[in-house]
Length: 219
Image (cartoon, rainbow, N blue to C red; front, side, top):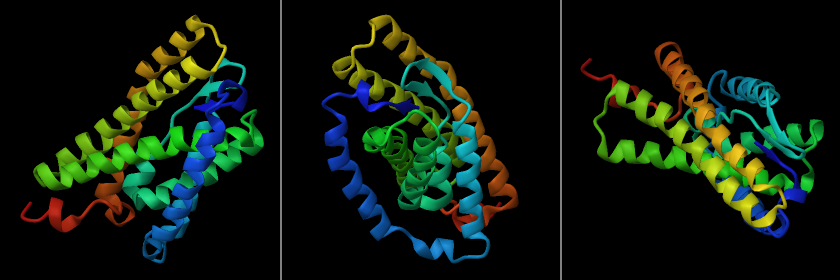
């Protein structure tokens, strides 16, 4: 989802005050040791490029308003939330340079397409670690599939609330914008769940939040 600052009067300046300290904290707390492991930096770069290409496949709702898949849950599970937020910022930079999204809305887009779904994915993962059985299928269907779908629909709803309060778009356009997130959350969930399930089987070392000892011992 890409928003133009003209649609976010009154919000985008505040978004900068929230986003940049959060990104700085992510840079400070990032688990850089993950990237020193074999092929990890290459995997991160390849994932960013792949998601940048996926973001090019957009549904244009109105001028300065487009919707696309996010991949935020995939980044979170593969690299943890700090690195996921940094990677999201890199992809968003590429989108800002190549689309009609402007830098004024960079922080707002970063919060909506990055911080919000990444935070939801991290929370679901932690709740799974604390309360749910250490089961491979629970990890796939709850941590990957379910959290990706929840993250996508949450992004749509929060964006709808912001646009409803700050933009001059017709209510019909805003309602259409919101309802598009219902069908699009399914491919977001399926693609995330499918990718994570394949990586867990063939390349578990690529998934920083998947612990072989926890999920596969005695199986």
